[in-house]
Amino acid sequence: CTRLGTMRSRPSGRDPDAAARALAKGCDLGDGEGCAALGRLYDGGKGLAPEPQRAAALYLRGCALGNAHGCLMAALKHDSGKGLPRDLAAAARLYSKSCDLGNGRGCAALGLVYEMGRGVVADPARSFALCGRACALGEGMGCKCQGTLLEAGRGVRRDLARAAGMYSTACGMDSSSGCASLGMMYLTGEGRPRNPAQAAWLLGTACKMGERQGCLEMGGLYERGEGVPADLALARETYARGCALGEARACDAGRRLGDGP
Image 1 (tube, rainbow, N blue to C red):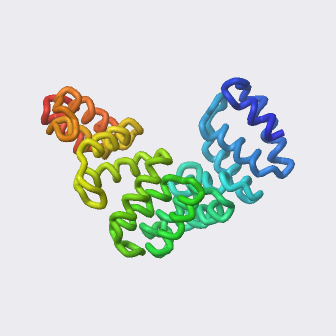
Image 2: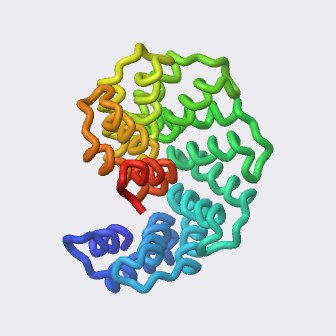
């Protein structure tokens, strides 16, 4: 039932009502994946009216049946307070269960929880270990988290070269923030030999992936002609993109160049 429901929820076979019926049957038969998949249908409103609370309940049911994605999504609901009461401690417990079930994103999220002390006592060393587990599971956010801790020397001995390696791994896993952090190392010459052209490539890549810091820094490179030919039109365009992504400094830079809100 779950497989049938999943197929019917895909664009090529989109029939949300039939998908919901099939997934509900799978969920009722004790398939945690079916519960979580049905939760996604109600969460995103993909052909169905969005019902955040119903989605959250289905995620919790899927989690109770051992579905790692259900645990992760229920944790995110508690974390954001959308669909479930905001409860950081409950979110941490669900991230932990998701991680224990082998979900790399759950491990990375739990690592960040321990780094920042959100719902738990801050523990940078534990954060580093959890992020390492996430990275080993192929989650770029985990590799980026390890790089950040290595660069700052939090929970682990400071090691810029190793941090750069983790950022590179994260970037290779399509982590926009990993690409941006590695780009900054090439720009400043810390952890990597200074190379403005390489920095521009990485920061530009991060910006295209939706990383607002990448857009801010790339706009500056275009404005200064550092690593790329100076181009004020491209600088304004790149600052505008960063501004649209929520980077206030990019908005300010765009206004300074005569563009932006």
